[in-house]
Image (cartoon, rainbow, N blue to C red):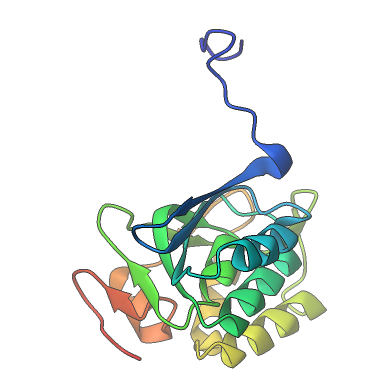
Length: 182
């Protein structure tokens, strides 16, 4: 009923994200906002689909600590991650949990920006950045390169990580056209 979309064509998504399991690929496909409860959803999906091999993500981002917790759950389950849509803001943090992190064309956007509270950027010295750095390091990602990219754009903007930097930082470990590192 909004933006020229006829009533009834919209899809209601509980908690701002949806989960679908593709048994042929062994993929838990998660799309939507990283809202409170996102990590619980990931945890339930991992338990519900023990044959899963990969968590496929697409998200505009959201809650940083939910993304970090989700990433740790993905890693603890020994699952890979891949993009099935753009991945922005907090989404790369959840993506970081994969034992291998795939990016396939045409899903080639990974975006970062400053952490914010109600749209206002937090200071670069805020504890959240220390927590992000520790988590990224734990996941084998070069936090010393990632944090400056985050700091370079305000919450209203988005730093699109280049293919080379996705590989150099290890945000992506297996890129369709580029890096292959483990």
